[in-house]
Image (cartoon, rainbow, N blue to C red; front, side, top):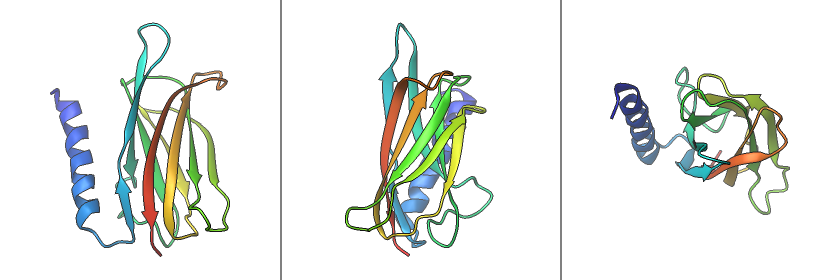
Length: 143
């Protein structure tokens, strides 16, 4: 692996280990999707939680969800939708399209209901008309 990719994979492994042993109020099962676009273009989306400036916590304020886009230098925009848990009585949370910057896009959410939230990241081209890649993961929130 190249040095940059090794660091990204190690960071994700560290997040997974921390999530497995932490008791900070949430459980995440990271996921990604490899979607082949038109021609020989392909994009891969994966999730990170928190922006490394604060401890990851899905309760008590904004919670950052970061969508990484590979290959590096991909252009377009990412929209993230947090689908509320069944029976929670709260609406889905939508973070409108964000331009991909330095191979990622980020949104902050305030999760107001306990349960499993389904996080959907959708990547679209510059025109934002057609979704060209989608990734889904689940996030368990316990306040």
